[in-house]
View (tube, rainbow, N blue to C red):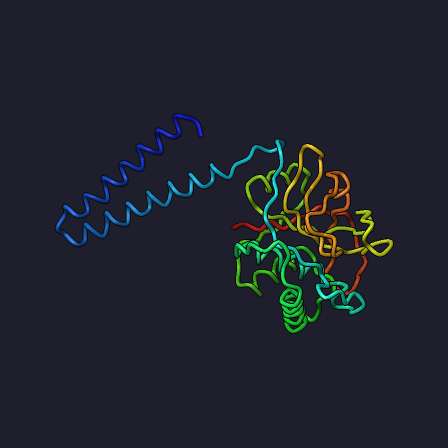
Length: 256
């Protein structure tokens, strides 16, 4: 933080402290309440500004890697079960939710993750009649409905710098992809045509995105080059492997 900003912050904090002390010098209860609310708003704003400054990393410099707990889409390795073989969207949402909750785990407990993934699948089948493939917009709608959370948004027509900028702000990114185009050696050839994964960071030194890819048990902290992952991003329709039209670049942004 620059010296001028530090001075401004100290002055503002001092003013807030003085304002709080004045509350105790005023006998009118109504005025006490009013001044207390003002002081609280000032302090909260200062806290938010300070937190934002401390988290800022300039785009294009160094490494950003958010601590996101990992799970494969088939945590118990039942890859032959149809719902688990197509549960990349649900697994991505589970990872995002545990990140939001501040879960310190590196890898989620397989039994708990499996139960949570299946609970979302059951929720989708009951409410929407489908849990095979879900578009970016419908995946976001599932997240809002199942977790009662509104801190997820859909951004269309994105570029690689757009993804980097969002990650730099400390936000999480989920993208739908053509899994065939990812070239992941751990996928069963040729890879899933419709596949969703979590982008947790980037390494600008190697020009790679850092991801949690639920399509393989080796997907934690996996890296794809900027070009490979961006070129693979492609929204797909909700349904049972419906035809894919176009190549729209879209991402889900999850904000703490």
